[in-house]
Amino acid sequence: MRVRGAVCFAVGTKWSIEELELDEPREGEVLVRVEASGLCHSDDHVLTGDLAFALPMIGGHEGAGVVVRTGPGVHRVAAGDHVCTAFIPGCGLCDYCSRGMQYLCDRGAGMDQGLMLDQTARFHLSDGTGIGALCRLGTFADHVVIREEQCIKVPETIPFELACLVSCGVATGWGSAVNAARVRPGQVVMVVGIGGVGANVLQGAAAAGAAHVIAVDPNEWKHALARELGATETYHSIADARPLVDRLTNGQGVDACIVTVGRVDGDVIGEAFGTVGKAGTCVVTSVGQNTPGVAISPQDLTNYAKSLQGVMFGNCNPTRDIPHLISLYEQGLLKLDELVTRRYRLGELNDAYADMHAGKNIRGVLVHEHAGSGAS
Image (cartoon, rainbow, N blue to C red; front, side, top):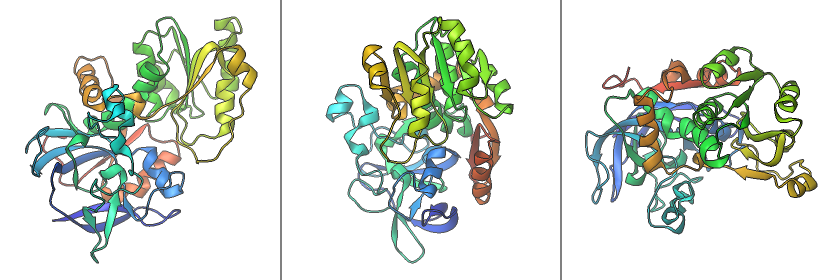
């Protein structure tokens, strides 16, 4: 079938809107009509080369839509189901899944190539060339063929433009606080970078009972929203926040500092690590270039029993945690509507990412032009 989608052809270019050919679903695969896709910074990291993915590749991984039809052997979903996409599959059989770590599922291997498990492409350019899809998804296209393990059934009552956010940014942020930092009642937590992920770190830390959730972001307009999402104090920089941290902790440092800036480097990690007190945790959720070098004190790491913790997908199990987060939204315990700063059409995708770089959005959402059924 013919579809439209956004393709990255080379590092340093912009998204190119293309007519594509999409194959039918094969064994264990599902055809999904994509209604909405969150505009995550991770997709932009493909354009900049921070993430070394095989190009050309169709972007988008934070999606929601409707199952159109299924290939042979599919049991998890059926035609007509509303689903979120999981950018990491959960096969349920590998060693990591069996230990409750779907975010490290072995079937995540090869995601940088964008091909299906049989190493073939489902998307093709107009000349017939097969191309990959980001995380084997490619939700910047209006239809996708994906593995059933990457389909998470969601209630039909939730708008697609909100459901899509839970499939990456919300789960990653919430889980960074709850699963990775293990925030507990009464703690002092700092969140560095308030975007589509950091906003949900605030929500997770507040829900976990932190006494102080300190939001750090240079963009002044984000501070009011940060307070609405759970921040107790807001600052423009870590340096600005240090006097408060010292006062609250008797100079010891925060219990957890969670880094969710748009692009991280070793200096940022080092500064964040320096804010953490004894037995505290510095959680790094942000993406950066694959270059060595983090400026931390080995003595602080050892003598103060600190932890430096990496995060993938908020260390969540998508088949459980995505429905759980949506349930929290339905109960009024998780904010989603407030996260959507602006909606865009496919032809506005490059403008959307320019807005993200300009600090204008918490989360932009791509709403595909056929959207309407179930979307608000």
